[in-house]
Image (tube, rainbow, N blue to C red; front, side):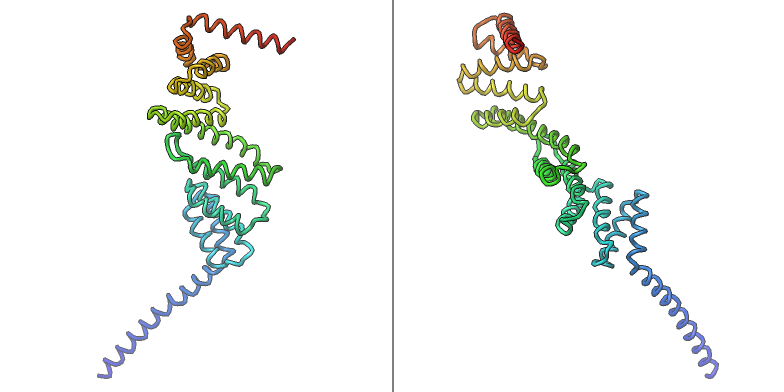
Length: 277
């Protein structure tokens, strides 16, 4: 009996010592985990190595560990950057927007607004799809240009803004074609007119103009259609489908295509001579 008690005592002592070892270890780990500065450095290192998932987990841990720390502002910015660089633009939008709300006077505000615009820009859909992201990108880039006119990011924002306007113009043409096909001529006319105003691309403007001319034809507004075709031929002579416009104009006027083209060329020369007199 005594022997059994001795063995039991030894076993209990061994089990107690085993359970004590990980307890000490877990305290050490816990102590390391509540060091936000160390966690932040690890997160930065992961970001530099393009290990974006690891960086995101660590930056979020910093926000949990020290929500009132001085490093929180940079943590939020770097968290947004890690989402952006990994192509997760939806998550990046959320964090960039939070940053702008929390730090409206930050010297990084213009940069963050530019990156927010880029998120929307990168999420833009083709012309035949919903253009919500395009509109959001336009709104954000315009806000940057208006609020931070001296920002080094304004130049790039203006370029991206033009791209967005072109995308909307292409969308207007796509929708306008649908209206034209379904005989909703006034709606079609409005869309093609808007496309011409938004776009600076000659091919897009020429296509919108041609479709506008076709719309006038469908509305039985012959005079408007003739004038529209004449303007198209005069203003966009290099358009790939200009022959179509010339043929349509010839049919409407009952004149030979060659005569129409010659007359318009003559008008252009006269206009040029008038400018240089």
